[in-house]
Length: 273
Image (tube, rainbow, N blue to C red; front, side, top):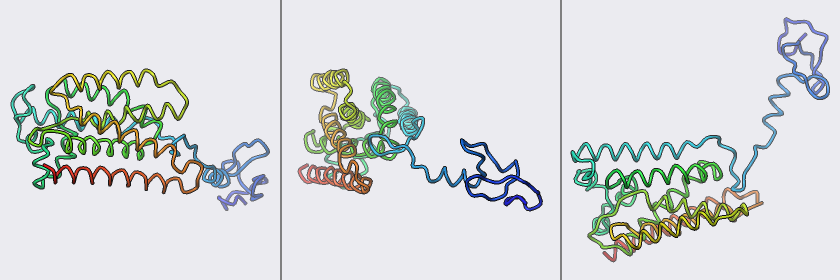
């Protein structure tokens, strides 16, 4: 009788486990036929393919579209509250969430995160979301979702830390630019690790850094901080613990350490304001 269907007589057996099996429970194999139970056990035993960062393949990007939707939705909300497309910074939501170092020093610490989801006008939003779409998809595909989120989050915090230390304490800063610059830095590190040309990305970074320094309204501080920390956390994910069975723990420790550095710098900036 079939091992999985006791009511079915059969003269066939699985060539792997030698249990009797009916035709419905057998699948052709390179040698003989294997039952569905052996195939299921075999598929669980096969290690998942890992990429250069130690991440398994995740398919199409999910976090990047989600971040874009969140940014666009928050922008639409500020426009509705302000009653203006270009002057959306007049909304209560924008004023309460933009990064103002002096306000953070007074305890409004949420601004170091909320500012990364606020934008000043449609052009600011469009530029950042376009860059996030083009660069973010590549980084998420290679690093995997969890590591991409780590890079994005640490880059955002790094940009906020640089603003806290180097910007006007009473000025306000907003935008996903710090995190986007962090992804640019991440892409450079990835290309170098994969031994692929990084000239075009370096040129793009140089152009954007130049724009940041020339245009007064652009926060070069946030861009610089995001770029440095984005490259640093990506390098840690790619190089630390490579080949070690404890690689995930090493990566987690590195990300935690860099996050604590950004928090320490933000705290220092808050004290100095």
